[in-house]
Length: 345
Image (tube, rainbow, N blue to C red; front, side):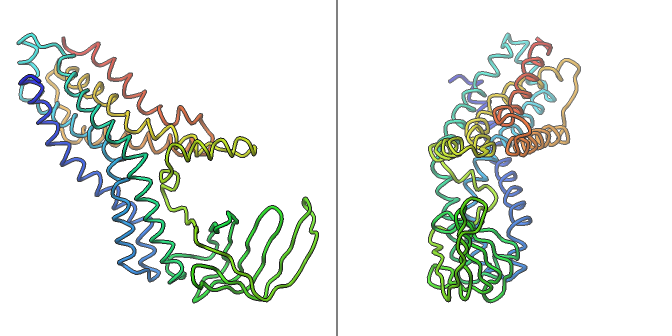
């Protein structure tokens, strides 16, 4: 590694650490505002909320790393342009691609770490976070549930909760073959106990039998709350298995396929960002223009906005999942190549 390589890696690395801290705090702050603050307002245990937030940190690190890398590159290269360091490199015979080389190597390291974490550490931490919420539901349903909540029990059945208080009410346990209907239920020893209800079985779309029951137990050992980032808690193998299952059953799997592509596309964004940042730095150099802090923030936000919109459209099947996951990277990569081509030589 040459002196130039060490210098670029040191400068980008220092800015990357600071940017990553800011991005992670912003992502966690969004989760706290959108998801956890309402739970606290309904009386959830602050310790439970803090534990769940801590389990979201690995996910925030993996998702925030590409954004922090883009922010750090734009910030460092913009400063180098302002202080004529890039001009000095060009005057010394150092080509633009030579500046790009150590940044790509650094991006490769970040890509490898993010891919490994996204398929091991992140799913494990998110599943542990879901486990914390599951236990909290059993202890204090009013804090974490609200009327109209839909859950999934240990057998994969949909559990609809119409009322929430000290216990729950207007409960429906639904499968294609039967429906359990109960006006009252309570959580007890890892299960939802229903009392004085009806069991209706179906043959096709028509009821076959109707029977009353005094007590029914719905096991909640594998209760899934599906909090935000639910699909991100699955590994690549689990996503592929679910996609194959849904495809065989003729069910839509846009969200799962989008999540599968994003497992690779999000970390791979570092390569597009390296091209874009270096290309933009030399393009601005030609007119002695400065990107500035505002420009750095705006360009980073544009990627985040494009990524978010693409994800939503891919999950809803509006655009192909492949395009939803890789489209933002492609836009920045193409822009970077164009800027490298037309920028100052």
